[in-house]
Image (cartoon, rainbow, N blue to C red; front, side, top):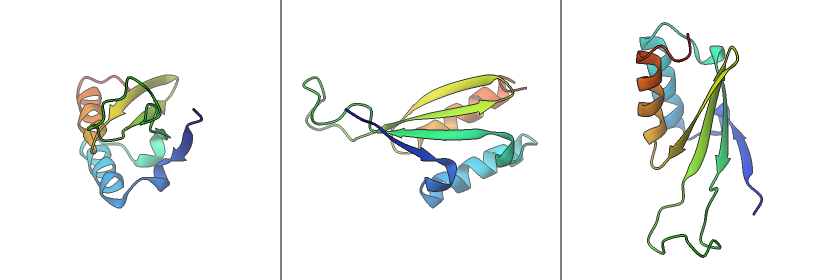
Length: 91
């Protein structure tokens, strides 16, 4: 399966706003990070994909040689990203 690569500006407005808020809360601007989104890594065509599952995506955030990927289901990646900022992963 070929994944669709999206950028930060392609995210839904709610996810972008949440990301911007988290960045500001920790003294960063969204421009300090490179965000890329790989849409639906596993999907209904995958035999192990649960029939009732909601399609997700893999969000990767990079900054200054550090990168972290988050499996996203309904915007959960922003909370995980904030946890990493709190732990100073990206500093």
